[in-house]
Amino acid sequence: MTELREPSVILLDIDGTVVNYNLQIPQSASDAISQARANGHRIYLCTGRAKAEIYEFLWDLGIDGLILGNGAYVEDDGEVIHRQVMDPEVVERAIEWLDAQGLGYYLECNSGLFATDNLTDMTVLAVGDDNPNMRELWEEAMAAAVYGTSRGRDDVNKISFALSHPVDLDDLAQQFEGDARISTWTASGKKQEFGEFGQIGIHKAVGVDALAQHRGVSREQMIAFGDAEPDLELIEYVGTGVAMGNGAQVLKDHADLVADHIDEDGLAKAFRTLGLIG
Image (tube, rainbow, N blue to C red; front, side, top):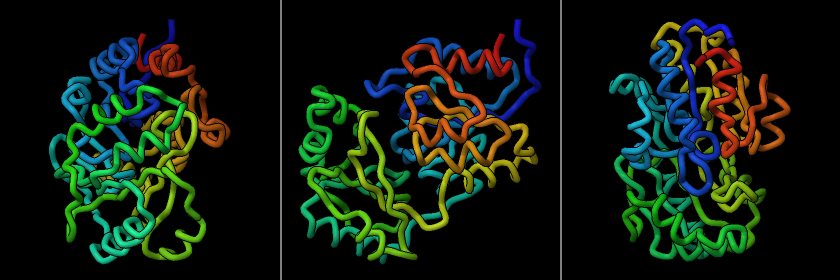
């Protein structure tokens, strides 16, 4: 039997790590999280999502706090300990560019998701045949969305847009150099269907560092799990970084441990290997 580890801070990415690309939490993952928390470990969701996307089934896992917007917002035991939002002028510039390109997009705020009316159609186009159930899954995932984008918001964590047709992301990065971080992410786990305007200097390790300082814990006491490139700074920051078996190769190359696929009990098996559960 694996010797149980001393209480640690466990940081869990959501999509592709806890929740699969059919928006399901494997029962083994749910059970492992509950057992780890019962063993004295603190559990934090560390995600690109906004608070509006932390639905009841995620709270029901039993968590101690949140790191949202890829590090822009940190909450511990209900207390907000870090918050940073996009410059409203940068948000307006981004919206003007997106509208000119005819792209579907949404503003990710803790108070809600504010989306263009064409977002679902553009998302289905971006994903294509990789997931024929994407329309249904996307509508479920965007349960908190308000359609008909709100302008002039001052509470935006980041902005995501469906890559429904080719755009020059390198040129976009040059246009917004010093003002926004341009990156991509996946809704299907198979290709990069979304672009993103993020905050300069903000990534998951920034939020985790704020949490570490607040709780007075060292990096060595922290264990992080992720599956995608935005998790790279996260797994490099903590004492033990774990890449899911379904994750990006660049993450696996930098991880201390590569878990099995999310749908093959990857999270639970890794928890057991690391001594978080018996």
